[in-house]
Length: 312
Image 1 (cartoon, rainbow, N blue to C red):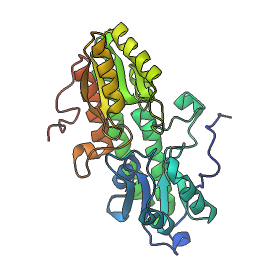
Image 2 (image 1 turned 180 degrees about the horizontal axis):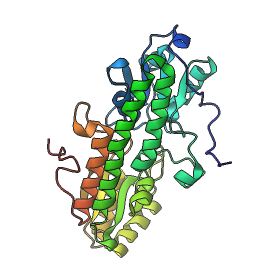
Image 3 (image 1 turned 120 degrees about the vertical axis):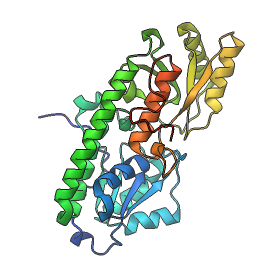
């Protein structure tokens, strides 16, 4: 029997609930973060109203749910959230919904430990496109169970979307290999990119840890400065949803020791780009990340990315 990642029991409640069972709700599907919302929209199409709570530039680790967001969670026909403690300050709200028996699903939980490589819950699974494709399948299954009338359509659209994810995964493997081997080191504001590093063969360092709740201390910053100098790393990356303070401290610390480090670009970590843009989709978000990283570290990726949409 395969070993499964331990679930957070206070947060998980399997959905697989039909519209009829959710008749006392307003029928909307609520998602907590944009990466989940985008997949849900890709699979559901026009059949469902999707409401996402945590949008662009907002750190889910730190987000405090408003009364309006709490009401949306409690009234929704189905709630799809990430889990693995990613939505830290929403925990009590999600628990309350589960305790009431309302349909809710932690779509990133329950994956095989052999797939993710650790029993320690690092929530940033979407950084490995092949793992996020597994999450897409789970979302498709939840939608199909919730809306049996359209289940066949959902499964077909999920399969089509997973093929696009496979193409993106292949693109990332190809372009990251163009980075000179000694320069395959990704340094970012916080440790959100470990799955990306493992999947695509690049060493990853973060100024802060997995969560952004605690700021990086002086010791951690100085150790990273010494590492940058030792490895002669030319670039460090900021993140759209994380303050730049700690990254700027590393750059200044390196400069004081005679090593110039530039900002290689802004990456999307815990949030996607602006709604309505290519980077405001999961595929666009990751295409932007892969292409930006490769070109900043001396590799060769097309400026328009794998779909030639990054310049739109």
